[in-house]
Image (cartoon, rainbow, N blue to C red; front, side, top):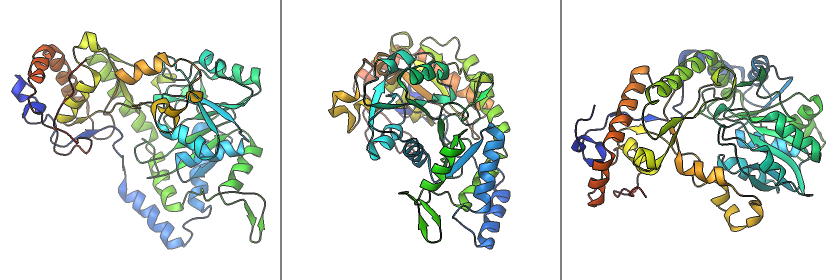
Length: 420
């Protein structure tokens, strides 16, 4: 543990972790099993076009979630787009501004207009009253995001959707394996899109899926992901190449086999962070509201600058210099990003909670490279930093050059912004 300021990595000391700990570390459990599946695919000669492993992957996802239908696609963004197209969306789609930019971009790219509503401070998911205030005659759907694995207020959003005759869709890219009062994420609303990107705890290197209870909607999505082709010489509608290949499905099937173990590991890490940071002034772990704490994929902490003594961004750079590659999702916020910031029409309501969270939220590492001992070292570092914030501020105020971790790709300068 650090003993004095000169031992902090930003001031030239050795980093706490020479090998960085990252948020979203890819988990490649059982590589031999995965490689054997891939070899079987290559030997079969059926590498893509709804091959047997893609079909098996879809079946396993339905088995785990209880969804009636799963349509596997090449990535999470494609899942969002095919889901929206198959749902017949037009005009405006209401979504949170506090989400990964892909949620908004996916709609923008297919000619829909993202409209941003505020979020609930307890869950960081859509606030139903903010959504209600965004509805216009051009609105066709609500697109909720089950963020950090926290379920949206599904019943509240459904009431708004029913009141205005809107589709209710979900971006569930953070929520595979989460449940809401006994209901599996993926079985709620009209449909839900998932990501199996390499940073997710269940992944297929790159991939996605749409879950729905509607056979009609599933048939339409299967048609759309394959150019609208219905036979060797027949095309029924416009479509796109959204197919998942069997090599990716081989990785996905192997990854699915470790779902329970990964959830348990990450939930244990989350609870350990929560316990060890409970008495650290200015830091508060966000509770996960899903059944049994959700899938454990994200350890989310909120930084109160006044109480902690440093801004979130200053703390972030200190941690990253120590090899704790924490993140500050989703700065700057969809509403402040191109192309949405240029038009007030995307933001018809105040985004008070969103703007506050964007200044305070931080994600700490979990996953296969993080142990209970590692969490203890990170928590101890956070406590030490908090106890010495005045001295850290004094040192920074002199304009002293600061040092970054040698493996940090996010660092492009040697100056650290002071806390405001």
